[in-house]
Length: 155
Image (cartoon, rainbow, N blue to C red; front, top):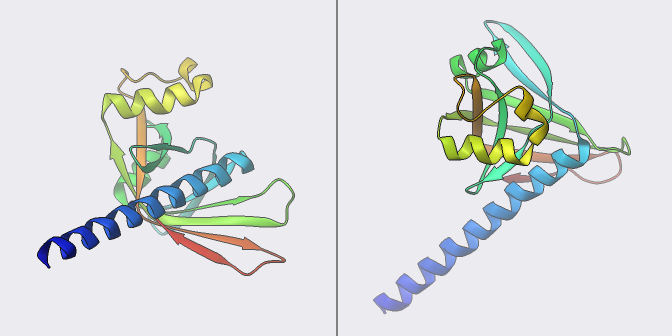
């Protein structure tokens, strides 16, 4: 009986991980389809919104990239809560993503994100003190449309 219980727990964990991975990949793919997405942060009591274009899945987590010298990075470190929005190319749907951002200073994560976005290598390097790659925790995405019901995923 105990072996059956452990087996069922393992299968539930595998299924949950597969769902999480597919949700992360779905969000990444949608953001790539949109091209540009906008990240809202907080600067004291003032919201700030900026365009971004890097969203990559690494080790099952959704990453974005920026520079440590930028105000946006400082705001993310002071308050890791954020929201992303992007409109699909046909203008009929959009996504909203929220959660918390965690800085990942690992060399491997920086290399991966920059390798996926080689156009950034003229400005950033995995070995510099400026490149920041951040992953999302407590992620939630809402896929919205003028013609379809809203659908949410967590990752």
